[in-house]
Image (cartoon, rainbow, N blue to C red; front, top):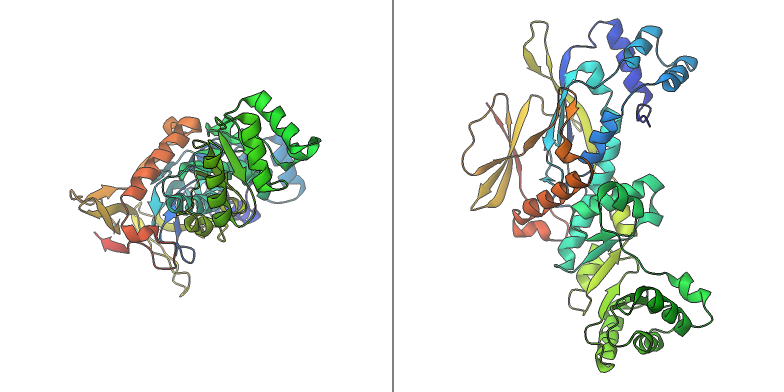
Length: 432
């Protein structure tokens, strides 16, 4: 299925006009970056790169798409012929998926002819803005959970395709599993899930529901205990499954108090190894508030799938350099007060101090000679139109997850604070 029409009309009309002025092949460099982090965030997380690379590979204008553009008089016949032969043949570099970023970080750098590169603007932003917002929210929840397992359960709070993207982004940020099966099939994200309240309500009694579930999945299953009365349900759960019951899940109520009471109840019944999982509209703040409670695992849905109050990362796609008529590179930038950009081809590095991130240093101009305390951030994603396979599919998703764990471990301690504050490290520009 083509991704060619997942774009805005003005991308095509710009190409139409650029072909008319014979500038559509002028070599350009576009960057994806954030002018600022969402309010309260200390760092951002790059997510969606693997998905975007697949969509770029499938960005083709077939007969159906061309016919629709022609019938709706979107572009002229010359441009239609150009689109019919469109294949991205440029180069894309960027931060490795899973990497953390800060204001001004060039997350994605797209280089090629103006027409072929400007055409990817909407697609790149629609993918990276959502996935990065989810990953940033998920990373905060992972920090708040302090090592306890997390499952993503937000599919019902997003559109059907966004639900898959959210599950993937949360896994990259450190969640251990998802309830979404397509995320498991397409991206290798581990899946989990047992039952909802409807299964209990289906049966004539709660005990009968537990018996059916244990019969199907064994005593190691997780039984939902808040359909009616939690205390009675825990007694029934242990009665049916025995003291080898795997876990119980609580999805409502005053969780700190309830979890403490249930833990004592399970221990008194001899089910000392039975785990307690909680869900119920959790976010990073409620998870942090449960740190002292005997919770063994968390299920988080709405807050992750919606970016926990920030459903977009606020990324933009801007032209920063182009060739002049002599073939020399020149920097270009917007000068408007509130939306000014930093022009020029850039080399970003993470400056470290005793292995702890100290600054985001962005060199403008030529290639810098890096010191031992500078970690290069850009990797090659697409080389002359050919994508690098290691960043795709389940393998690429796993690589991104590993990258994120390394990047977060490198951040200073204040990066993990949930209170509002500035970016964990400053961004500084150095001209060469």
